[in-house]
Amino acid sequence: GGGGSDGVAARGRRVGAKRGGHGGGVVVLGEDGTGDFWALQKGGSASIRDRVTYVAFDLLYQCGEDLRRLPFLERKQLLRKALAASFDRIRYVEHFEADGPTVWAHAHKINVEGIVSKGIESPYRSARGGDWIKTPCRYRETLLVAGIAFDGADFSCHYLARRQNGALLYAGK
Image (cartoon, rainbow, N blue to C red; front, side):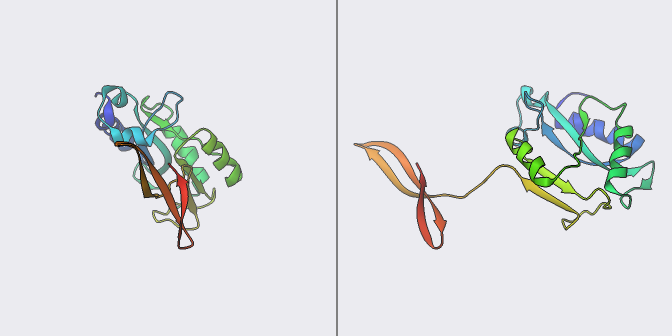
């Protein structure tokens, strides 16, 4: 099968059929090897399709056995073994046993989408809760167009504002 998310999905199903069901996602790998979720949203071009990769971070089922009750660290060890002879478009996601703020600061520095923090002893739960926390690295904010400037008859810029304590504060142009 070819590249693109369809090719990666088919490969993932083949690995899943042989070895198990994974927790993971499809990303476009950037030049530096980090995932670029926004490139996936843009889609389409051959250069993007050639970089589509499935990243696996959890193993939920293996050979018909439900592994969700096992501790996270044990599932990660089984996942690493299951993907050892896998396809180049399916990658194992490493985990770090470190404090969250340190990992987040590093993730932010290398400009990844965010981190997911899980308790190493926790079983798998599909709903968010105290066992796992997703922390984005990219800051997002909704700004208002508070004004428009012209240079004579030509448009010059927008003036932006943010709401804070019921007031509009200048946020840039």
